[in-house]
Length: 284
Image (cartoon, rainbow, N blue to C red; front, side):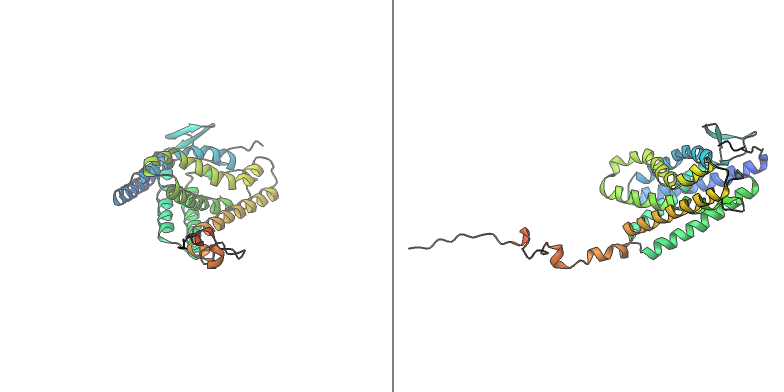
């Protein structure tokens, strides 16, 4: 479905402000990654930072499918692909957005997070992501376009509110376990390519209903239903990852009756409980 895409010119003053503001945020994220690397004497947070920057190649994909666009007239461009020109100020956004929050969440998981805390963090993430988007939308730094966009508030489609922070939580849970089980510090350079792949897998998969509807129909009732479905998928992912990482959600399994844990469910002793047979000789 061909939806007309708006194009406009952002004033040089606004472009400078956006570049400086987001550039500073990107540098703060780099400082945080360096701090973690030095504190823990490990390299992997630095590769996370690089992978976050590489993840910007997902931006034109979600722009095309989710009907988001930037002012391309006289734009200073960061990357150009799929017929979209992504402005320079979006590069630092990715360096920050997909490094510092995820690393912080992984730290909370290691420290021991409860289900209630997990959902509290996610709720804060929904509010923070939404507030972050509304200001640039207001000043025309980017726009969500198309009359068929369902359930928009102040120009910001509702599904992004929930999907954007969801992928941070899903990636934090995924890489927490990969770091524990597979990705040693020696293998940490793999994070540079795994990071953008995980972003596509988490955010892109939940957004499939909206992507499909926006590019298939002009009916806002259908696209609104797709929005609700994507929100439901995002909440499902947060709930499932909470079950994986939250200490109180895992406690029932840890408190399983001793007899069952040892394999006494059939009344027979476990192999580890059997005493070795000792042969004794008697003198005749």
